[in-house]
Length: 417
Ligand SMILES: Cc1ncc(COP(=O)(O)O)c(C=O)c1O
Image 1 (cartoon, rainbow, N blue to C red):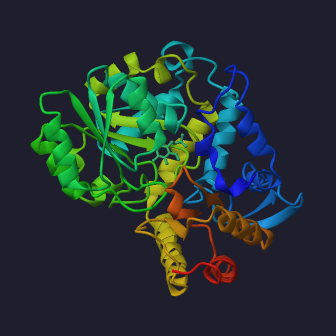
Image 2: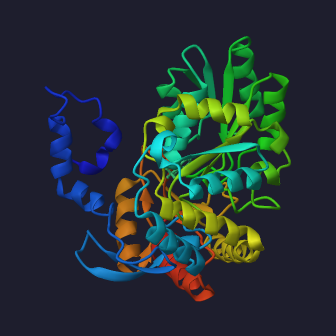
C-alpha cells in the first residue's frame, strides 16, 4: 500500500462488522511503516514546561532532546509565569486538586465566582459562564442557545467545536465563504424568518488571519441576526485592553455573545462565554457541558485569575509578543515562504499537497531541535498542508534566529513558492 495516498479522512466510514472493531483497511494503513513514521510525530511527550526552550521525548527516533518550542499556545508565557504558578500552588493547598462537583451543586468555589466576575468585567459584559474546556464552552453555549429548527450560520473556517455545538443542538448548519459579507448576506436572506445565530472567529486557528468583523457585523445587524465571536486565539492579545478582535475592530456593541478559552494566552485550561445576565443564566440551565460536568479545577481557575491580572496590568507581555511576531515574520518573509494571510501570532508555513514532504521535513526540523508540528489534511485543505507556528512572548532573538536558520535549511530550500 502507498501509505501517503491515504489520510485519516479515508477510513472513518469504511466497512466494519461492529462499532468496537475498527475497519480492517484502517488497521492495514496504520500498520504501514510509513504511516507509523508519520504518526510518531504526534503525541510526543514534553518533559518540561511549555517554555520557549523545552525538552521532548521524540517518538520518531526514541531520543530525548532540547528544543526551541514553536508549537505551544502559551503566547504570553503565562502558563509558566511565577505569579501564576504561585497563585495556582496556593489554591492547590487551599482547595485540593479538583472541584469534585458540577458547578450547580458542589463545584462552585469562591475562585470560580471571582474569575467569572472578572472575565465579565474584562470583556465589558454583564455575566460570564465558565466551562472546564474551551471546546466544552462552545458545545455548551451553542447547545444551550440553539434548538431544532434554528440555523447556525458559520464562517467556513470555523473550529470543529463550533460545528459540533450546532450538531448537538440539532440546529441546521450552514456555512458561508470565509470572511465574505455578500456570502453571509445571501445565507441570511435565504433563512429570513428563522431563528439564526452567526458564528465567526477573531483569529482563525489554522491560518492566523483575522475575522473581518467590521464588514460582517453590519450584515448581521441588517438581518437581525445575533453574532457569536470565538476569541480563543485573540483574548488578552488584541484590542486596546486585550478584549480581542471585536475590540480591535470597534464592533463590540454588535457582538451578542463572546467566547474565550483559558487554554491559550491565559496559560491554563477551561473556557468561558460572556453576554447578558439573561442569556448566560439560560445557557447555564440548558447546556449539558455546564450542568452535567465537573467544574474547572480550582488551582487552574486561581492561576487564570492571576494570569488575567498579570496580562492586563500593563502591555509589557503583549509588546514582547508583537516584537517577536515582527521578527519572526520578517525572517520568514525573507525566505519567501507561503504564510497565507496570517496577521497574528499564529503563522502557517504552507508547503502544498505532498504529505510525504510535510512529514519528512517535520522529522528533519525536529531532529535539529526545533519543535514545529505538521498539520495534515483533513485538518487543512489537501493542497495546503502546512506547519503551524505559534510565536510566544518568551522567545529570545537568538532562539527566533536559530529556529529560522533551521527553517531556511529544511523548509525554504525544499519548498518552492
Ligand atoms: C478557535 C478555537 N475555538 C475553540 C477551541 C477549543 O479550545 P480548547 O482547546 O481550550 O478546548 C480551539 C482550540 O484550539 C480553537 O482554536
